[in-house]
Length: 179
Image (tube, rainbow, N blue to C red):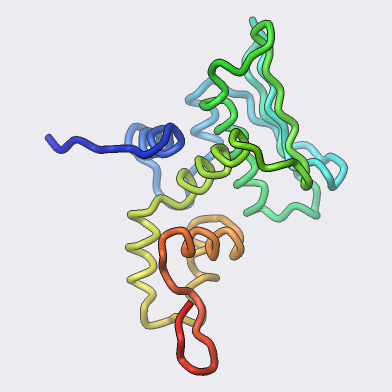
Protein backbone atom coordinates (compact mmCIF):
# COMPACT_ATOMS: atom_id res chain seq x y z
CA UNK A 1 0.00 0.00 0.00
CA UNK A 2 1.37 3.43 -0.98
CA UNK A 3 1.67 5.95 1.81
CA UNK A 4 0.50 9.45 0.89
CA UNK A 5 2.35 12.45 2.31
CA UNK A 6 0.39 15.66 2.87
CA UNK A 7 2.04 19.05 3.27
CA UNK A 8 -0.89 20.55 5.21
CA UNK A 9 -4.14 19.75 6.98
CA UNK A 10 -5.98 21.47 4.14
CA UNK A 11 -4.44 19.06 1.63
CA UNK A 12 -5.23 16.04 3.82
CA UNK A 13 -8.90 17.04 4.33
CA UNK A 14 -9.43 17.76 0.62
CA UNK A 15 -7.87 14.43 -0.36
CA UNK A 16 -10.05 12.59 2.19
CA UNK A 17 -13.19 14.24 0.79
CA UNK A 18 -12.39 13.13 -2.77
CA UNK A 19 -11.38 9.66 -1.64
CA UNK A 20 -14.21 8.85 0.78
CA UNK A 21 -17.05 10.59 -1.07
CA UNK A 22 -15.83 9.50 -4.52
CA UNK A 23 -16.27 13.01 -5.87
CA UNK A 24 -16.10 13.91 -9.54
CA UNK A 25 -15.69 17.38 -11.09
CA UNK A 26 -17.33 19.67 -10.30
CA UNK A 27 -17.03 18.65 -6.62
CA UNK A 28 -20.40 18.57 -4.85
CA UNK A 29 -19.88 21.03 -1.97
CA UNK A 30 -23.43 20.41 -0.73
CA UNK A 31 -22.63 16.70 -0.34
CA UNK A 32 -19.38 17.47 1.48
CA UNK A 33 -21.20 19.81 3.88
CA UNK A 34 -24.00 17.29 4.46
CA UNK A 35 -21.54 14.47 5.20
CA UNK A 36 -19.83 16.73 7.76
CA UNK A 37 -23.17 17.52 9.43
CA UNK A 38 -23.11 21.15 8.30
CA UNK A 39 -26.29 23.01 7.40
CA UNK A 40 -25.42 24.85 4.17
CA UNK A 41 -27.68 27.73 3.20
CA UNK A 42 -27.69 30.18 0.36
CA UNK A 43 -29.01 33.59 1.25
CA UNK A 44 -28.79 36.99 -0.35
CA UNK A 45 -26.66 39.39 1.69
CA UNK A 46 -25.13 42.79 1.05
CA UNK A 47 -22.45 42.54 -1.66
CA UNK A 48 -19.56 42.96 0.83
CA UNK A 49 -20.34 39.59 2.50
CA UNK A 50 -19.21 36.41 0.77
CA UNK A 51 -20.22 33.91 3.44
CA UNK A 52 -20.08 32.90 7.07
CA UNK A 53 -19.43 29.89 9.24
CA UNK A 54 -21.04 29.56 12.66
CA UNK A 55 -20.61 26.82 15.25
CA UNK A 56 -22.48 27.02 18.57
CA UNK A 57 -22.29 24.12 21.07
CA UNK A 58 -25.34 21.89 20.92
CA UNK A 59 -26.30 23.05 17.43
CA UNK A 60 -25.24 21.83 14.02
CA UNK A 61 -22.65 24.04 12.33
CA UNK A 62 -24.06 26.47 9.80
CA UNK A 63 -22.63 27.89 6.60
CA UNK A 64 -24.37 30.71 4.78
CA UNK A 65 -23.22 31.69 1.31
CA UNK A 66 -24.20 34.95 -0.33
CA UNK A 67 -26.45 34.03 -3.26
CA UNK A 68 -26.75 37.58 -4.56
CA UNK A 69 -26.65 38.04 -8.32
CA UNK A 70 -23.33 39.87 -7.86
CA UNK A 71 -21.73 36.61 -6.68
CA UNK A 72 -21.35 34.26 -9.68
CA UNK A 73 -21.96 30.52 -9.10
CA UNK A 74 -18.22 29.73 -9.22
CA UNK A 75 -17.57 32.32 -6.53
CA UNK A 76 -20.40 30.91 -4.41
CA UNK A 77 -18.97 27.38 -4.69
CA UNK A 78 -15.50 28.62 -3.71
CA UNK A 79 -17.02 30.46 -0.73
CA UNK A 80 -18.91 27.34 0.38
CA UNK A 81 -15.70 25.28 0.15
CA UNK A 82 -13.78 28.01 2.01
CA UNK A 83 -16.36 27.96 4.83
CA UNK A 84 -16.17 24.14 5.00
CA UNK A 85 -12.45 24.74 5.45
CA UNK A 86 -13.23 26.88 8.51
CA UNK A 87 -15.20 23.94 9.93
CA UNK A 88 -12.37 21.47 9.39
CA UNK A 89 -9.46 23.73 10.30
CA UNK A 90 -10.98 25.61 13.28
CA UNK A 91 -9.85 23.12 15.93
CA UNK A 92 -8.39 24.89 18.94
CA UNK A 93 -9.66 28.29 17.84
CA UNK A 94 -12.86 28.39 19.86
CA UNK A 95 -14.11 30.74 22.55
CA UNK A 96 -16.35 28.82 24.99
CA UNK A 97 -16.95 26.31 22.20
CA UNK A 98 -18.22 28.99 19.81
CA UNK A 99 -16.72 29.67 16.43
CA UNK A 100 -17.76 32.30 13.90
CA UNK A 101 -16.06 33.46 10.76
CA UNK A 102 -17.55 36.20 8.61
CA UNK A 103 -15.81 36.42 5.26
CA UNK A 104 -16.13 39.68 3.38
CA UNK A 105 -14.62 40.96 0.18
CA UNK A 106 -12.00 42.81 2.24
CA UNK A 107 -11.30 40.11 4.87
CA UNK A 108 -7.62 40.18 5.74
CA UNK A 109 -5.74 37.11 4.61
CA UNK A 110 -4.30 35.80 7.87
CA UNK A 111 -3.01 32.24 8.19
CA UNK A 112 -6.50 30.84 8.88
CA UNK A 113 -8.02 32.53 5.83
CA UNK A 114 -5.13 31.42 3.63
CA UNK A 115 -5.49 27.82 4.85
CA UNK A 116 -9.24 27.90 4.09
CA UNK A 117 -8.54 29.30 0.62
CA UNK A 118 -6.03 26.51 0.06
CA UNK A 119 -8.55 23.90 1.20
CA UNK A 120 -11.20 25.36 -1.13
CA UNK A 121 -8.80 25.31 -4.09
CA UNK A 122 -7.74 21.73 -3.35
CA UNK A 123 -11.32 20.55 -2.83
CA UNK A 124 -12.62 22.16 -6.01
CA UNK A 125 -9.50 21.70 -8.19
CA UNK A 126 -7.39 18.71 -7.08
CA UNK A 127 -3.91 18.74 -8.58
CA UNK A 128 -4.13 15.33 -10.22
CA UNK A 129 -7.39 16.15 -12.02
CA UNK A 130 -6.32 19.65 -13.00
CA UNK A 131 -3.16 18.23 -14.55
CA UNK A 132 -5.12 15.51 -16.40
CA UNK A 133 -7.71 17.92 -17.80
CA UNK A 134 -5.03 20.51 -18.58
CA UNK A 135 -3.09 17.96 -20.64
CA UNK A 136 -6.28 16.79 -22.35
CA UNK A 137 -6.85 20.38 -23.50
CA UNK A 138 -3.31 20.87 -24.85
CA UNK A 139 -4.69 21.30 -28.37
CA UNK A 140 -6.92 24.17 -27.24
CA UNK A 141 -4.67 26.52 -25.23
CA UNK A 142 -6.71 29.64 -26.04
CA UNK A 143 -9.83 28.26 -24.36
CA UNK A 144 -8.24 25.96 -21.79
CA UNK A 145 -8.88 28.24 -18.78
CA UNK A 146 -12.55 28.77 -19.68
CA UNK A 147 -13.11 25.05 -20.24
CA UNK A 148 -11.38 24.12 -16.98
CA UNK A 149 -13.45 26.73 -15.12
CA UNK A 150 -16.64 25.21 -16.49
CA UNK A 151 -15.58 21.61 -15.79
CA UNK A 152 -14.58 22.35 -12.21
CA UNK A 153 -17.40 24.82 -11.50
CA UNK A 154 -15.12 27.69 -10.53
CA UNK A 155 -14.20 31.09 -11.94
CA UNK A 156 -11.57 31.59 -14.62
CA UNK A 157 -9.64 33.64 -12.07
CA UNK A 158 -9.57 30.64 -9.67
CA UNK A 159 -8.33 28.36 -12.46
CA UNK A 160 -5.58 30.81 -13.43
CA UNK A 161 -4.45 31.05 -9.83
CA UNK A 162 -4.45 27.26 -9.46
CA UNK A 163 -2.48 26.82 -12.69
CA UNK A 164 0.10 29.36 -11.45
CA UNK A 165 0.41 27.41 -8.17
CA UNK A 166 1.05 24.24 -10.16
CA UNK A 167 3.50 25.91 -12.53
CA UNK A 168 1.29 25.29 -15.56
CA UNK A 169 1.33 28.02 -18.23
CA UNK A 170 -2.06 29.33 -19.22
CA UNK A 171 -1.32 32.28 -21.47
CA UNK A 172 0.73 32.77 -24.56
CA UNK A 173 1.93 36.28 -25.38
CA UNK A 174 2.29 37.63 -28.93
CA UNK A 175 5.87 36.28 -29.08
CA UNK A 176 4.79 32.72 -28.25
CA UNK A 177 6.13 32.81 -24.70
CA UNK A 178 4.06 30.85 -22.18
CA UNK A 179 3.35 32.15 -18.70
